Length: 607
Image 1 (cartoon, one colour):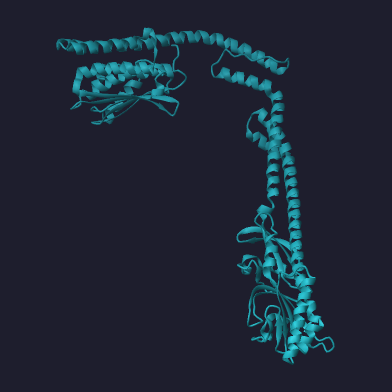
Image 2 (tube, helix red, strand yellow):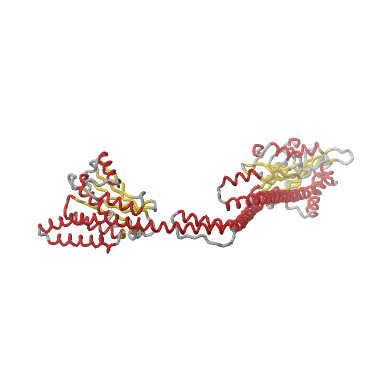
């Protein structure tokens, strides 16, 4: 294990600080993870067991309430053993007078029982079903059933089990032809003659099932969990709108509920994981089944999981902070020396390694400082010589542009003065004055893009007066770049080249489009596009070779003069070899020249 971690640490990198931090993390993260996972699993298991036990207790409480409701109805079964009832079913059917007297006695008996028991409003009817052909109910009085009593499941079961209490849910009850009851729970028992044990009839107590529904609806599991009551023959007593569908639960669930009276299990119902608790109503065989979403029931578990995760994350963060502090104390002198060496490597020879201690690292710093001092002395002499040569070269290239442009412009002024158009002459002169005001810039090599654009507008105005309808132009500049400083006279030679070698030699003239834009937030593109005659591939290759050939003198026969090569060389002398001009052209479709320079700070640097 240790060798494995060591190999992994070596693969990460060469940073001593990183290796120390990773080693500490490997030593602490595993125990933290084990403690967090163990704590979460233990807490989740305990909470699930507690929630299950609580749900089972609720189911048992509901079962007790249901059994109490049935017990209230069962108390009325004592009527079946009363002498008045026995007299009615045994002798009260022999004559009308005897039947009338027996009926009056039964009414009084019913009143007595209702007065004896507090719960009586839920009892809808008390029926004595005599097998001799005459029956009596509290609601219908004396009657003769129109149906065969043996066809009624409650009566049949009571007769077959004469000493058992029958508890059954019935959607409809119709002993008497005069009235039918809906949605009742019937508690029944056979009326047995004491001496001969002859079954004389059946006593049926019909209880309003609404009392059971209200009782079940008042008890819930969580926010959405609910209870159901299922009969022994797997019919829903409550809720009435549900039917038993064994396909919604697994066979193991059905088997467990049928084989045990009380329990709990987890199963998928309607596509959702649920806790199912169940218990059995004594004497009726009904199942009280509660369903509640496991996610809802274990919401506290999920909260503990989040807290455990946050605690582990916080512990990890604190561990990392502590380890970073320790590693910083150990590696700070080495990192400081490394950073100083990196700065020196990039060309900053003013840096010096700080001395904080008197150990071996301090000796390294002393030797490094001495070496840097010597290198700095040598570099200063070399830079002075190189900067002097560079300034002379840039200014020599700059000096080539001004006379060249002045010659062309004076030619325009001469041509205009001959036409005796004083207004045009004034405009050209003002444009020329504005051009040279910016071009000279009191000897500065850098101007803002706003000045460069004004300069090129003055130049294009002069050329427009010269060529009139032959030349059209547009200038589009990103306003956010107006105050950025750039090397001056980048655009003018390129625009002059576009006019002199592209537009005026194209039939019908053409347009020059000047665009200054930001590119990828790291460079500035100064684009000059003309719709002139363009160049074929061979000519374009020659031009590109000429502007990039530093060691060769410019051939005067090229037709491009000093313009493009001058701009390209000045850009590379100042900004670096990765910057400069690119040219795209197609014969008959025009030429696009793009000058790319870096966008850094204000773009200015002393030369």
